[in-house]
Image (tube, rainbow, N blue to C red; front, side, top):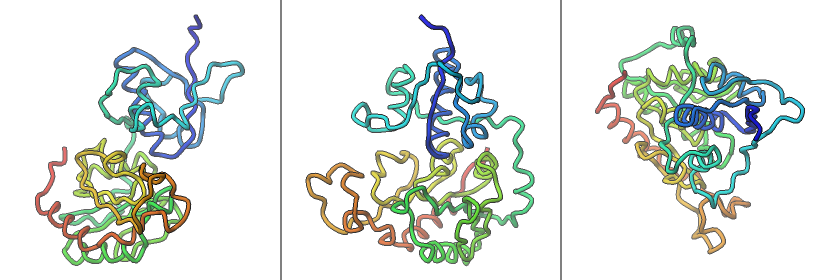
Length: 277
């Protein structure tokens, strides 16, 4: 039996890397395992300093590789649990996410923010256009919250379209800096994206916006969820969330989400406050 350290290959985005980081930490803590991770732009930055990772490098010839992309949904409907099964963890595994943040500081981007008494992070973008609400809708939300006295701070990648009435940090922060800043925020309003997962880790109150994906299945129990209305009743072949979404008529229209509902929920959350530890 080979004792060579297993190599992990996980193509995907920031959210995938965050899930993988949590799984590797759990496997390290419970099973005493360590892994090597194939170097990618995302994994090199996100997973650096992880206690369960020996090396983040280019794959060595002949090394054993476990690819964790394209996992069979029938094994478990939630991605975290599918990963846990692949890593030999007992199910259901606690969905505790983890990022190595030792030595990381958010002092620079934090110094740029004109903080107010209440501060709301927004993350409008997603890897899938079907998961995104239009910028005009986000403009409405940001204006209403700004008029209430809150500061709205936009997070995202460089080149992202700016939301009016929001202070934009898009392209300014690293993913780890964004996570640390999220700890300072009173609320996050987000599409289904990396920061939605990160808020589960930081304990930041969250309103998540959903379209074609199943909010209950892909989101987190503690988050408030607002789901777009389907344009038509799904057929049997479309009954499973996310299935058969090949045309606009078969997708959820994110712009059917009522911005007044977002603002009302946000103001109630801000009024209740949060304990920032």
